[in-house]
Amino acid sequence: MPDPVRQLEHTHGHLTKLVADLGASFRVDAVETADETIGLIRMLRDELMAHFADEEEALFPFIRASVADVGPAVDRLETAHEALAQLLGAALRLAEGERSLAPLRELHARFGVAYADHSVEEAALFDQLARRLGEEQRAELGRRLRGLRGAR
Image (cartoon, rainbow, N blue to C red; front, side):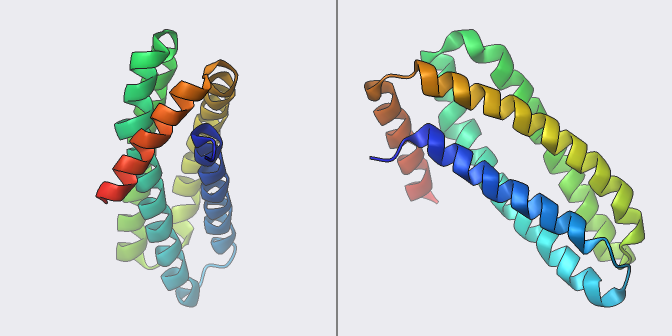
């Protein structure tokens, strides 16, 4: 059975690539790239929201019940999820309305910093979980994640 903590880490790697791809799309300010950028923002939003759902509906409740002393880190991650979702929503509204990439550069820069900070904190949590969770706890977390994904 795959390690659920490592699976979540792998998903974060994919999301980080999407964030980089989005940043690369801002290098040219042309109407032709606006559609591509809007598509990237939508893809990032959808995949990020699915990742956040996995964490907020399965991982975080599991952590609060099983590894309670890391609760403050979970609280900070949840707050970061809200901020990242708001920034992506604003970027999408701006991209769809302006059809110009120039105003998105600053918003993406803010998103990039917030995402990087969030990623560092989340990686630290995943490392801690990888060291502390026993096989039974990993199996329980895996069941929770599979149940959540099966419900979608």
